[in-house]
Image (cartoon, rainbow, N blue to C red; front, side):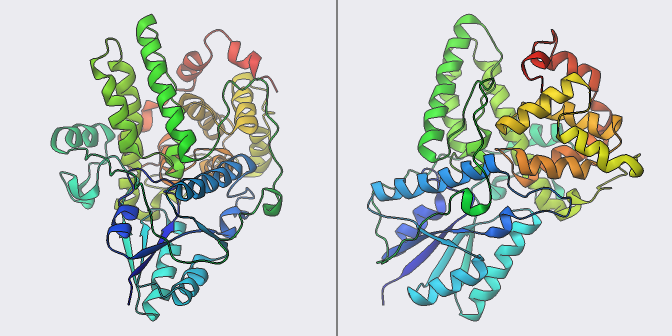
Length: 424
């Protein structure tokens, strides 16, 4: 009997540096690559926001089709289905006589719950669900400490991990693939099918995101070129905007690291390299914190107390904030850019969060939920971890005094140009 492995793609939509895919190809006679569009990811949250707004939804759909095209180019395809993975995967296992299922492990509660449901359903069929890790720069087993002993302070985490751990090389992308015989590989829903409308391009936006591994790799090379040009002019400000492809797994953090590292020998690029590396380390840190503490990050009081909430006016103030109608120019500009493009800089995110929490006295979880809907680069650990930190309820309680709204505004909009550009 031939060995067939079902490869369940989730937020890992790439061929390069994909250990799960490489091992599945090596250990099987044929594989069945599968992507399942789970409508639960597009529903409404208990906060009255959407789990996935139209901008990120479009990016997801583009990323899935990008993976299908990449697989076709090496002789394969991607089976696209819609429904609950815990229902569909066992059906596929029986229909195609699958011997094992591979997938990447997630860290947030809803994603891990779905994995558990799939695992339980497969257990009844005596089929193993094998977990892989592929979302971080550093592998869990290469850390200099067990998960339970990871330092809560980011600076200590960074210092120890850079001193005592290694970043492994990337797995090569397969150049040939043998897939199971499938009559109907399925079609992908459109935005309209998901009850979402396409976002009109805002002429003020200086960048447009397109999903998929190929687009992510092209953008990575553009970032490297921008680093070279910035090094010549000694302009050290660089916003890479790689985070959207990293969030979908269309780009591997290790791929980004090793490509950017090639620039080390170029004069004046060290600061830019360190800036991008810092972003990758923060991504790792929050994922590992979620592994360590579970779902505490989703609780309003988190690891402390969220402070004053103006309960009587909370919904009204929240609506003003998300609709860019607070009357505070910089914050309204930030929210307009977010609503129109799905992307704002890190300092803009902090500015909007500080104003919502401290000035409007709205619970931070409403802001985090709204960012979940709107951000094109949303991932649970970074989003909820960062919001908890700004709210002063993160796991590192010493970071409470780090954030300063006035300082942020001076850095974000020193001459008022940003507020003028994005005036709603």
